[in-house]
Length: 512
Ligand code: SF4
Ligand code: SF4
Image (cartoon, rainbow, N blue to C red; front, top):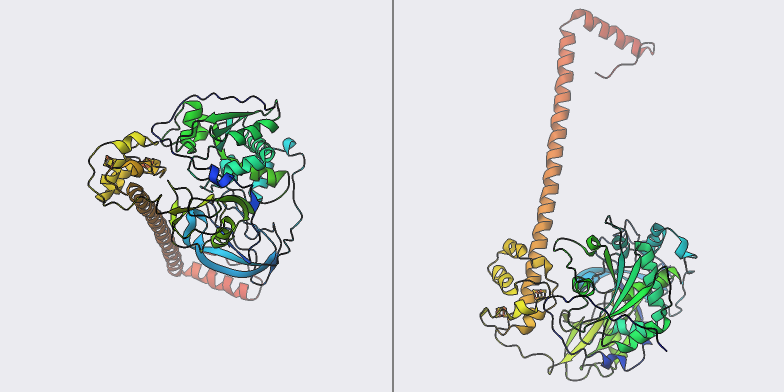
């Protein structure tokens, strides 16, 4: 018998579309563990923040769970060896945050023994101060596993008002992706325990776990093990299967009816959102003492022979994962990293699984709309109707097309969550999201250039001030010497003092 579930919801975000979920295809087979590959390619920067210094050298033998980069502050997250083997060196390839090209990846030639360092569980974690818990989560390499890879410690230890409610985001809204659902089905207890750990670390007084209404089996699994913890109850809430329900701001609006301010954060409303896989990773880090070195990834789409979910080590080459889904069918035409709406088309599979990689999708020609010629915007406002960020996508597009990036910023370009809905419904087949991504990168580069120019200017001004100060001091000394030379008694005193000093009897010379 399952425990009762609270099905109440309070609001609905603007726009959105009900899409065919297509998740069952990858959930037909039980979750399996990927075999160890020959080599792991571990991106050293898998989070929003700087990479830490590398702690190992080529030829070193490393054990599973050993930190390979140095942690620092809350934004420099360490990465750990996902299995035992020999460090071969650093190579540059696509990977890491947003799967950018030219990322530094540590290459580990695995020895197949999978020897691990001793686990470091935190005993009595529920009696420890929040800071001790956060420090531990940071040392265990936790980042947001929903895709953004924001350092978990930085999100937990911010300078904001008290957190009232922790929202665990299990609203996996992109079609085909089912890794969170597979996680909940296989480890509901770890998800709930990890949610309580994150709540304790953030000071939240209550927890809401939000899951889409179609995920009936996962919800039942959670309800079956959800104990009635009076101090930190977890409220299971279903939300409609409307894309992009899993967007942080959209989910908050659905659950609370409140909009996160355009220039604010959920924390401003007393809310904190963490992905459900991050919650399970928090359980593993604290209860089992294991750092974040593996994750579940969905291999799905009509282009795979046997779609499935697999638990694989971080750093596993994506090409090794293809075989686990029976390989690609002859008619597979496109591989996408992520979901069909907001994922990135892959040109090749020479990149590794990252902490935020949730899906590898294989599509055939049948699912890929033929590339229709783009036509001028007809101002139909279909894009406005679906935009979950309440933007005017057509106006953004016009500004960016005319190279007017600052006006696009003022129109809310950075509020765009790149959900892809506007492009999906556009009758003129305009590649709207490509324009938004490009516009954002131009503005980010401009901001970076401005920061660097300001820094260079400050350094130049400081140097000029230092040189002027030194020149003034030299001139003052010269004037004092000149004055004394013009006074015969003072000059005689100086000569006698110099003789005394030379004989070691006189007073120390004062620096004039
Ligand atoms: S949907 Fe396309 S054609 Fe219609 S207003 Fe938006 S950009 Fe223009
Ligand atoms: S991609 Fe951006 S502009 Fe387009 S619908 Fe989504 S949030 Fe709105």
